Length: 231
Image (cartoon, rainbow, N blue to C red; front, side, top):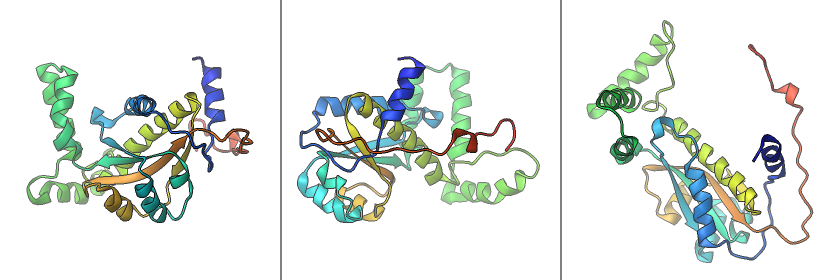
């Protein structure tokens, strides 16, 4: 795929409200999610999980939690994207094993992860980072530490994966509807999602409706939002 072809793919993607009745094959869904999991991931920790919802009864329950957005029940499949708050505990050792670090590289990687994610005993280290970061920023550049802003970090990771998923679905001639307005607590309860997971986005996916007219899509002029070198 060249740049022009990708540009056309990005332009053709629409957030739709209507779906055809045909189910999306399991194998295709897994292929799309395999594309999603190859999105960039901070420290390669891969905190995103995917809950595939196809049961009509569960989708009916999700309808209320999703503020009556009908695409939740009209689409044959709904994917709930979640981010794991305990990703370091759950994934770090597997990531290190798969990465084949040198001994020095592994030690350096562990230090970086601890610096960014470490909370310490009884959260003492988290408290120090929370208090010290604004002060230290006066003297030296400081990143936004996931230990202090875990939900913010997880939201970015999940959304990178979600965008990969929607573009892959478009390439597969499917249509999607990203849903941001929902009661996260109710969604988590309906689907048995543990409290250690956040839910930034839900995506309905299915086949387009035959003879459906393409939805208009507009964007503000590029020059209104591009800034060279300085704002």
